[in-house]
Length: 372
Length: 164
Image (tube, rainbow over all chains, first blue to last red; front, side, top):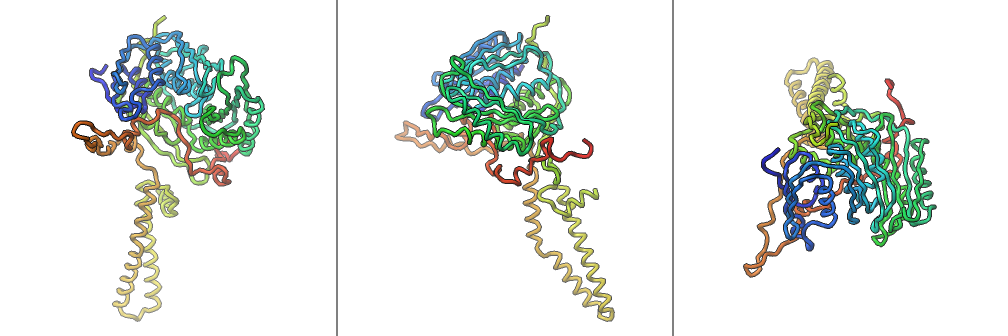
């Protein structure tokens, strides 16, 4: 454990700093959080995130100054167990869940988190996306079994929310190193078109237009329509689409779009949404790799925390968020990845450049896990 | 290395590392020289009786021809290298050239209050929205047939490698 902590400026990459701090046991101090803003300090959703972190850990010390522009965090032990959390509706549950996915395998007892709030909004990965892509990524690293699932009980669109999801995850003592260098070809496309508090016909219109674009590549497309009613439909109307392309080697590439939240900007037609989302999926296929762009940092974290062995993962171009995550991994775990660019050969039509990430795990073992 | 050289010679768009680049230039030189020799050979056949001076002149001209468009060639090579993979490791882990701290620029009003200017570029980034989403490249227009063709082999319906 480090004697001195790390210091950062600004509220960007807030979650990765706190998550890595919790896993590494290093203290972190974040200064100048919106210090020049008209409304300085931490926002409600960040406060809500800190409360969630406090719920899953035991013995964390959190200090925030009067204006909320400075945060000091001394991590405790990851406890886990059953927790319930009302996620602030400024951000969707995906915002909170992304961090929980990173922490969950390293708890003392297996996590059963009931999260309430906005399940789908346009800015963060939705719970549907995480369910169909993040979970398969974690399975590759040996995190699977009975109690590993993410269930959407109620759907709640932005801005009202009212959704509910349950995430359960077993604990692991060590993480398996992986060699994911060949994604294989895409064998099928699956998806969920959801609609709440609007006509169920909306979902069908989305499916129709998305299929129109994707059918020229592959015939095996099934987009499930999900219309939740009554108390399961949350507080705001809306609709959206999540598309997932599955490859022969079990990699998942995804794209999604959600309708504009009620009262914020121009409404979008379901046909346009379907088409645009299908194009986003094509963009994701162009980027390619064994892990899609929204789960890059999760995969890199699990590689870092693996046993002391070489892990390789082929990715598409690194997102700005991932690049910052790599820098944070270096700060907290002193691990630097080997980054190699793989150019596709001229005659193949397999999209853009791929990036092969290689590292040796730190040999992290979950000291919190109880031995039965 | 023969293959590499071949690839270098065709000079395919930005598909060469630094080594290839050198190869390219070398092979370019060689081919130039070969041409020169060939030209000289024919010349000597035609004008066998002519004095050696002229031959030297011819050689000089050849040398000058070799120097033609050197700047352009260099700039092309540079651009190709720029297009080729940037050193990602440097990009990720290299030291960030930090913009001069604007803290000093703060004006003072009556020697008592400081005017704080919110959201200058660096600070703005530090306080940007914490979001993991990777926005798509806007230059890709997925209505175009060539764009669609660029990913066809990613699907099982596309072309397969022979060993698969």
